[in-house]
Amino acid sequence: MRTHALLGALAIAVTLVTTPVDAGAEAPALRGKVDDGVERTLQRARPAHHSGAGFNSDKVVEISGTIKEFQFTNPHTWIQIIVEDAKGAKVEWSLEWGSPNSLGRQGIRPSTFPAGAKVTMRLRPMLNGAPAGAFVGAKFADGKTVGRWE
Amino acid sequence: MSRLPIALALIVWMAPGPSFAQSAPGTLPDWSGAWSMVGGTVFDRATQTGQGGATSVGVRSHPPYNAEWEAIYKSHLERRDKNLFPDTISNCGVPAGFPRHFNLPDPYEFVVRPEQVWVLTENGPNVLRIYTDGRKHLEDQWATYTGDSVGHWEEDTLVFTTVALKGFRDKDVILDRTGLVLSDQSRATTRIRKIDPKTIQVEMTIEDPKALTKPWVVTKQFQKMPAGTRVYDYGCAENNRNPADIETGKTLILGPDGKPLNK
Image (cartoon, rainbow over all chains, first blue to last red; front, top):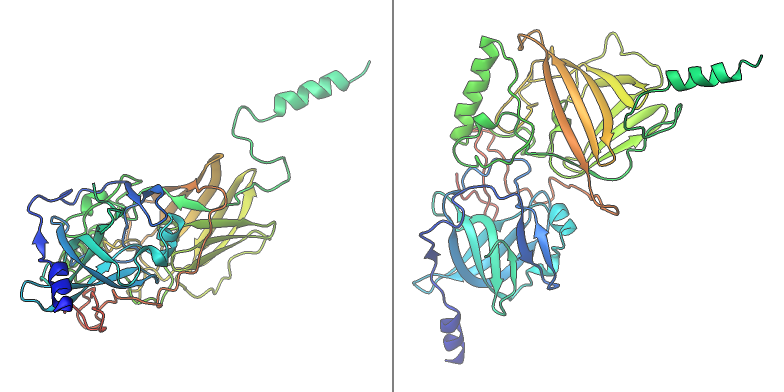
């Protein structure tokens, strides 16, 4: 019962943000707070070897859930997050971000997204509705943010 | 009567005018540190359409293609807009090649020695070797991705020629992800110099009698990154979740189970 209550409290719906955050315009840099609490300038992740085709650059979606894994690997990092959909089913989302090298130079670490952390994510979703997207920003339960959030 | 004043005056008169002097005569310039290319990795901003079309300001240039190669490039753009023109390095198997070597994200390093210069790119990683020990190009040099580069120093400027390039002969060398390509007849003369303490400039004059109507001059600049910047492994195959589908050319997005989410 307690577990169900907890899950219920954590259950979130995928919310489409009707007003695009930036409508695909490229910002040269963004501000974000990483897990050491220091505000830094974070370069927007640019795919190193592909165009980003498959992601909707005109829309930003917000999801909330629990971090499963932060794949801090080349050529791009991936944030795996478990999201409970409106029917209560758990769905694993994949959020693509920049290279670990580039992010690492800007203060991001494998520990930035610890497994089990509750977080709300903003992403550019896939065009075909599959549970994946390009990472935009994240906000943890304690209010700490990573990437572009404001 | 002493000739010393005349000699001194002559030396002063012969000295170079005001310029960014970065090294004493007879010594090599200091290009140490990590450097980052200025601007995005697409040559011609006007070709940036459709998904993934966001670009940043940088050096833009459209090669002076002849009609045949302009049509080839146009066909690549059309396929790109349908996500059917994969980047040749998507499957992590081949070098970026020349001149794309100077069109990559992530840090660069310029290693200068009297006999050779190495241009290292974290992305890839890729290595461009420029021999400055007086050797010539081989007359029977076979074509490779990065070609063969030999050169010399003109004061603070490294000047070198690059030949024996595969170009788009085997469909596995492109200049940027829009599908900009050159032929296996392409060759280049490149001049690299430090134009101020924080900027290295690379000017490539590319000739290609098969694809271009005239030489294509491309200038790229590289800004010095903060002191102490580290350059890392770039294990492209470590966790590549964006491979190209060999059958369709589509760039895939793999889910956590390794299966395509956009087949």
